Length: 186
Image 1 (cartoon, rainbow, N blue to C red):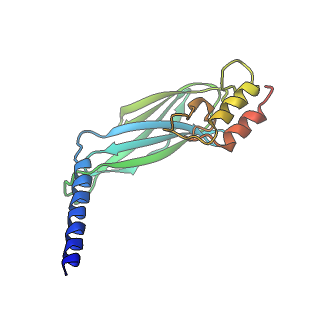
Image 2: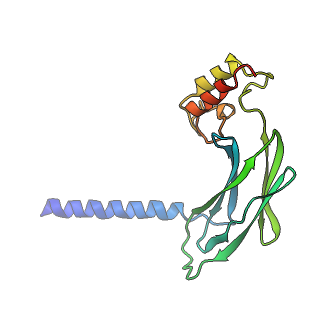
Image 3: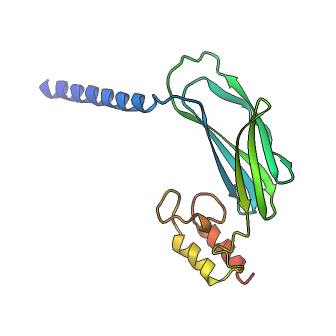
């Protein structure tokens, strides 16, 4: 009986510890934060991933809109909505959406997130010739060696090299090496 009581007490205390840990980490507050991540798939189609981190319950997006291009500028207008029955519990949660930007030529572009007709957050990104990793004007064995050295790493690994991440997907894999090798000699 003493063993059973001790086990129940340990489980109860562990549960309280778990609750206190998770409740305290969700006590952050403030306006939502926005993060942008530009990436390209294996077909060289460009995407912008938008992550909106909310620090209190009650936010939702009813319509993410579509990315619209005007020369080198993209914008997407989304619609906020208050969540019915919000009980005001402090929490942290992410709202995430991928916008397809299509095939892009080399150059500098901007992406602006518009809320209710007003520019809210924006970022600038560059599309270059990704296989020329060391920017020496040609794709050679040095570029392949850079990707090979970073092979198998991912963000936030300290050995991760974002320049070797040809597909902008947060990891260095065979697709990055194959793309660089495909353009060898250019």
